[in-house]
Length: 288
Ligand SMILES: Nc1ncnc2c1ncn2[C@@H]1O[C@H](COP(=O)(O)OP(=O)(O)O)[C@@H](O)[C@H]1O
Ligand SMILES: [Mg+2]
Image 1 (cartoon, protein in one colour):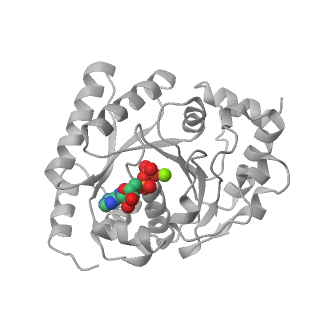
Image 2 (spheres, helix red, strand yellow):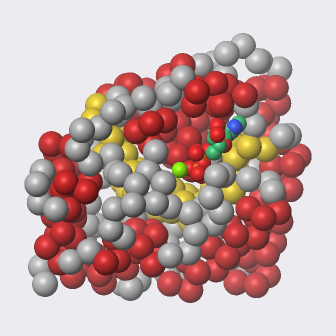
Image 3 (cartoon, rainbow, N blue to C red):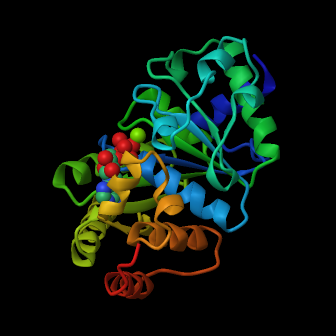
């Protein structure tokens, strides 16, 4: 087995090699339940980071429902499937989108990551390493739920962003995800992102409920990345197959992505009181 593949494996088992596997900051965006807005979050964060001068690569790793390319109006000729089969190298399938964000497209239904043979796995990891050399951020859009292939990606990433909506079903599934991640690697940095909140109070309540459960049952504190309001501009942008940051840069959702990017870049602190002030300001400023 190659060196890289064995390092990926040891990371997947929760061991930390001394040097990071990738040059870029690697964030995996995941959720317990599907349909909570992961792909929109990935696209929004990617565009907002790129707007701030960051070099961003996004990998579509939702092999069940790969649709990042559709969301951004791209028509990939080649996908990860060709890379795994050795017909293309990763650089050849990269697609450039708005703000220079580069996309690694997937196709639905390709072999699960857990079932990759060593050669395919190596092609992927080495390709990602090369691409990460020319990027500041590698964002990974994962499938929802607790599957080995998803967990493997989450373990390989430096940080995990767990997306939930205030819906009780989404919240319960998010807790299950925190639990599994905690058991695999209690030290893995984990961010909570509440999407699609109808009000600040609802989003805050979601945060408090999940935090209370993880502290009580797992003794774990999860950090809050932020809260993205329910915003009809998101749906409009989906329909037009463009990112909301690109199409409606002044919309509440886009402004939130910009603030979250600043937060990730360490430029602004949004918690604990900061986010509430930010939302109130958004509510009073509804120009798209
Ligand atoms: N903040 C939001 N406001 C309004 N609608 C949203 C928001 N986030 C996501 N949506 C909608 O939710 C649906 C699912 O989003 P998607 O990103 O595809 O979820 P996932 O990737 O988790 O399956 C989309 O139709 C999208 O328009
Ligand atoms: Mg998705």
